[in-house]
Each structure stands twice: as C-alpha cells, then as structure tokens.
Length: 345
Image (cartoon, rainbow, N blue to C red):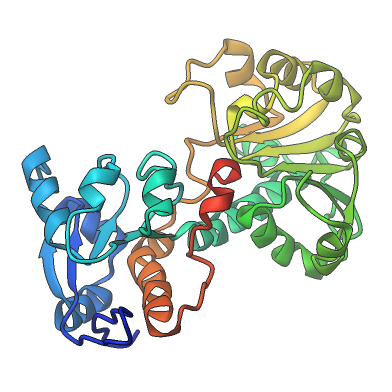
C-alpha cells in the first residue's frame, strides 16, 4: 500500500492533506482483522482514530463524522446515510469483513459513499474449506478415523474415492464459488455451474459449463455458493433433493435457507447422500439425534471463511483496494457495485 492523501476533484482543484481514518471496530476485532504490519502502516499513513471496546452510539457518530475513510468489520453497527453524509466530501467505507448489506444502505452508495468489502479475501478461505470438505468426505476420513479409534482397521465398505475426473456442480458463481473453481482445476473435474446471472461466455472463462439447476443435481459433487436473497431461499427444494444421486457429496457453506432442510436431513439419515454442512437455520443449531449420529455428514460451526491468516489479512486487503481507487479510480475486487448490492452475499 502507498501513503494516501486526499484527492478532491472539484473544479480542477486538488487539495493534498493526510486522510482521516476511523476504525469503527473494537480493539479485539482490530487485533483479529488487522495484522501488526498493516496497523503500523495505517498509523504512519493516515490520521487514525481507533474505536473502544464499548462502541457506544455517540462514539460511533464521532468516529464516522471525523473520517474520510471508515474502517469497519464484524460488530460495527449499521451506518445510516445521514451519518455517512457528515463532512466535507463523500466518505469511503472499507469493510474488513464480508457482506455490507446490513452495514450501509443503497441510498448512501447512490449519494456517493464508496464501499469496499473484503469478501473476496474471505472467499479464498471458503474455497479451501470446500475443497477440504470434498476430499475429506470422498475419502471417508471421519468414518476411517472412528473405525481406527474403535480398534478397527481397513474395511472394504469404507474405501474412499478420488476427486480427479468427477462431475462437480456449483450452485452460484459467487466469489467463493470462483475461489473453489480455481482450486479444482488441477483435478481435471467436469465442472458445471448454475447461476441465472452467468453468461455462457463467462462460464467458459471459468472452465465450466452453464447448466440448469436440475442438471446440477446429477453431479457427483455439489457445492452451494449463493447469497442470501429472497430468490435463493428454498432454491433447492425437496423435489430437487430427491433427484440427487445416491453417494453424491453435498457441501453447503453458503446459506442454510437455500436447502429444504427436512428433505436434506432425510437424505442424510437414509444414507443416500454424503454431506458437509457449515451453516444452519439457527446458529448454534439444535440438532436432531439422527443427524448427530449420522456417519455420513460432517458438521462444522460456520467456519468456512474463518482462518487465522485470512482474518488478519482483511484490513490490509480492503485498504489496498481503497488506495488503488483513490489513486486512479481503479475498481479492484473489494469495490462494491451498488447496482449488484441486492444480489450480493
């Protein structure tokens, strides 16, 4: 990152002074999403104010009002449009986390607030999680581990399978899907993607074929990567789940509401599918005894995007894109397109 000054393009005038950055995050969250090197850089390059552990309403208002750049993350309260309009020029919101839907309103962006999100960096962690879950379930590692702990050894019924050459269906061509797709390339899979906003040309650029949702259900591995929108709620209903072939690996690291939960749990309970579920309708979930005891499902506590390295990189990742935009208007991956806010994660 480079040291940034304010660049104000008004009637050809350029005013250079040190930008004010307010971190509207608690100290614990700052330590979580901002590595020491990035913190030192920010403090040497900007006029920085850090949030306190309380982050009360008045403090949030004061921090945002003084700032040119508002650094946010998980735990930052909603920033209303009126608050973001205070100051000499439109503010920049740099979100060192994922979705910004609950953080800022579309009308704030329409009014000139530039918003950036580190979702693309989180997507890298999610992609690795999904690949790990796919390989873990294909090779039956949880069952093999259980068998050895119980004094058993090799069992023909627990012989695993390879990923190479399999048909993989991706639901949603989001940033997390693209991260997984990049990791899948060495396995020479037959890649199929369902996304109503994806063109055939863009699918081909990803190395995939664009297919219908029903065709996705015929894949040997299915991974879900859609955002939470009214259109995606219940997207994969009971009829589609019934079409999933026996032995298919189903990975959901996106939104629980995308799947018909009773039908999914029935397919797991019957042993028809092998699953990895990282998201639930209620978190922490209340799990049925059947699901808890099922050997063919991997249950994790919404951690697909949660890694030590990934979290520490978030502030630096999003601020690098903010600085590129300040220099020359470049819209790098962190830039949030207001027109796509409604269909984003």
